[in-house]
Image (cartoon, rainbow, N blue to C red; front, side):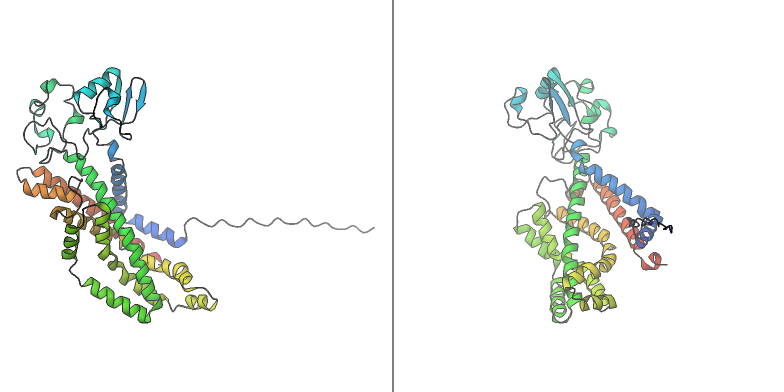
Length: 382
């Protein structure tokens, strides 16, 4: 009887996992990190922006959390009526002596580091507004408006104005924090919307060419030749001020800056061999534009985004300075600059806005330089 050999099947090797980052992306990330100034600017800006997103927990005229008669309350998140604290007003003023005594007698409160919101008026300023930062005054002077002077329990660091007050007795530090947040959020929203419209228009022009490209290019040339600043001022003076209205007005012209870059990339790549092969296989135009051409065009587009963001913030600040920006009372760096111009005897107003704008725009420019180096093909593909 012949012995039969039994072969043991060899288990197939598991498929290799696709790396999270391609070699090209790794080289780009390494180039970004190699630019130390841009790399650290990115982290500093990210930390500042993240902190500003929680501005209500840093500067607010309401406690973060409070305990009243055994109940845990969150005034920073919930608007409690004053009748809950034995009052009669519709909105609770947690800075009033009556409310503070009532809550402290029946519980406790945890306040933010700065006990002012961007619109809170300080009624205990030592003299007429604007007032200088508290560290420029003696304790007896900065607390003389309190009932018990420098012995008053409310004469503490949280109630001091770290960077002084403006001409309406509002805390400059709180307005700077909220103004930084709204400037960055506005700039990000405008940059993202401009990129979507600009990339879409440039892609259509560059891919289809012909009459489509000719007509759209003539329209963009006419649109770009308009006096943008005067049109923005006229529209902003007619429409009621607001975040989204101002965003829509600036979006009318900001999208044009990216069209030329994307159009050139699509014009260059639309006749490449892989695009012709995709057409021969019956792939649709929109799929080719999205799957094959857009990733190449985004390399040049991403290098412009930090600079567009800084330009958007500067435009908002300029309109606020001229009085055509955010609604009156909104936290605005441009409005603070205007106050500094009108109150030369209070240099802390102009200096605060100047240093905030300078640091913010400098960080964005440094980040933009690092992104440009990261996507530079001479460094990425060497």
